[in-house]
Image (cartoon, rainbow, N blue to C red; front, side, top):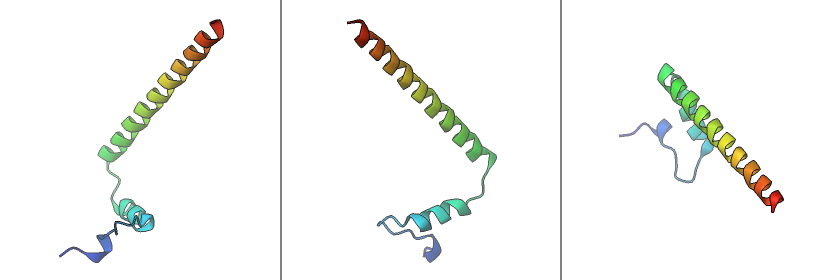
Length: 62
């Protein structure tokens, strides 16, 4: 039998879900995962930005 406090309805009760997430202890491992994800996203954004600049530059040359 599940504890009712941790049952999040499929309708997307974000308040209950965020409370459930906030209730988890913040471990060094989860901090490391977040940091790695943030760095990966920053690198992807930078790559997209550079690609967009190169496209614009190429478009302007034509």
